[in-house]
Length: 129
Image (cartoon, rainbow, N blue to C red; front, side):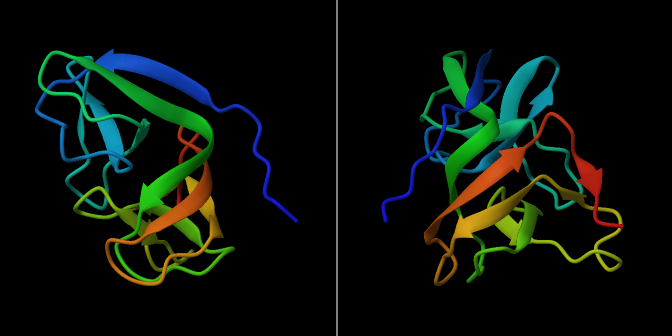
């Protein structure tokens, strides 16, 4: 059976940095602009869908299904948030208590740098408590 996904909720923000190498990574808001997540405790606003340079429009999925670059092998069903490099990172409740879970993997990744598919909700992040 083929996977089907409903349209995602997306926004466009001005890129606050060169994001041309950040497609399918988590981004956050800084001074009203989109910048790459660079800490595991960052609160992502969503996943970047394009590759804008500074000042261009950054297309961001906030809620819904999206491709994501994984930071490691991540199985389907695992809760995720951002890693220190903006890649999807597995989050463990009770362990990663200063980090945010914003989604769940639905199509697994095999290794660091692989593309996985996840459903995310960055509009309502929760700590992995």
